[in-house]
Length: 293
Image 1 (spheres, rainbow, N blue to C red):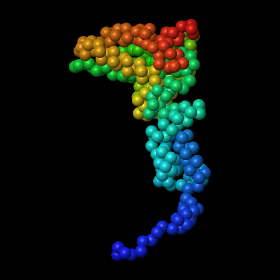
Image 2 (image 1 turned 90 degrees about the horizontal axis):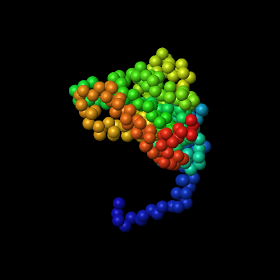
Image 3 (image 1 turned 30 degrees about the vertical axis):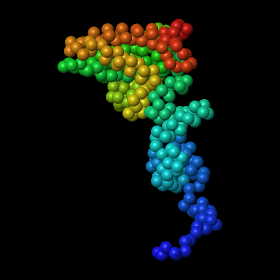
Image 4 (image 1 turned 60 degrees about the vertical axis):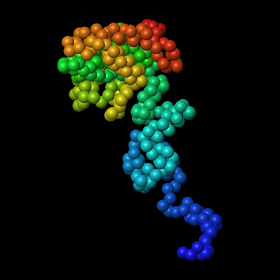
């Protein structure tokens, strides 16, 4: 093309007409469908575009998964993290009550979110149970089973040779349930991971034990790093304390000696640990238990 060839100026009228035609194009996603996509993705923040499109098609809304993903990206909701963050902002700004599925998805990226929810109003209402290995040099692994009360942060700890349902039940049978029964606080729910010692078939020992005692069993989503904020905090402090103790590096450390270490730690935790929850600022686990007695 020659340099002196006339340049074609853009026609503003034609551009506006093109935009109007595009807005009325039969393949353009209607606004109400986009709103339905946004509402559904916040209702199920863990769902991806394929599952969202499949659910919409079941509701007679025919739309492809790439179109769903395009709409989510335009609203900055394309990833699970973005959807969880958006949902958390709505909860904080509008004081919304979210369901368990939404709470778990928010807690996936913000493990302290569950502590902000008024889930437990008295001791024993919601307990969290977990297990972690303690590896020794040249010896078999020992395990620490841990239960933390979501209301008071009061905890129970057991050293054991096995990471099994029997060991998990032993902690409940010997420490947690007798303690709360003595104080008159019924244990209503226990939150665990999906590890084999906590769940399996319908005849799984741990699940049958909870059913026998009329205790609800909540399972965290697969791959969850934190069950509840109090448990995550207690677990981190316990691991730090055991790491600082030179005894755990010794080959002759047995279950009895480890249990004595755990007993000393848990007594100190109950007496001196300060909660960060602003509703009970400065309170220790025992401070929250005393008024209930």
